[in-house]
Length: 153
Image (cartoon, rainbow, N blue to C red):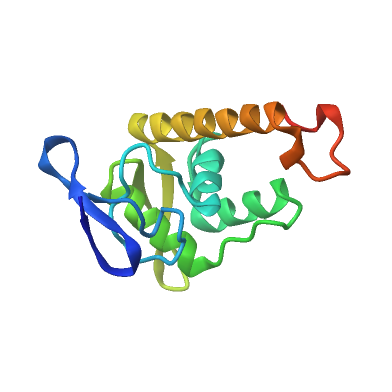
């Protein structure tokens, strides 16, 4: 691995494809549009987008609304962040896009759906987060004082 800009590490992934550990979908969340390394942590926005699409095909606006509703507004994905992430996910094969022929504001109304690879990425991130939750349960000193025994899954 070699060091890239803004602390990202660059290297070759499976099939020789260049990957970085940070980018539009990575942990820095700054939207640089770089591919994400397999197995690297997703940003909260990227994970929520994938979770939203697990429920079925949706328009971008509906994805953002669903995320805000699920999280009671604690996670809001700005339109620019949402569509940059969706574009990157489409380019990486996690999400497929379909133009349903309708227009909104003179722009094609696009629907997004999760691909099998996107399902795999979402499942891998869920497993990673479960591992973190298990580690927290084993180290109660790291939990806030007001956390009850059953607060973590």
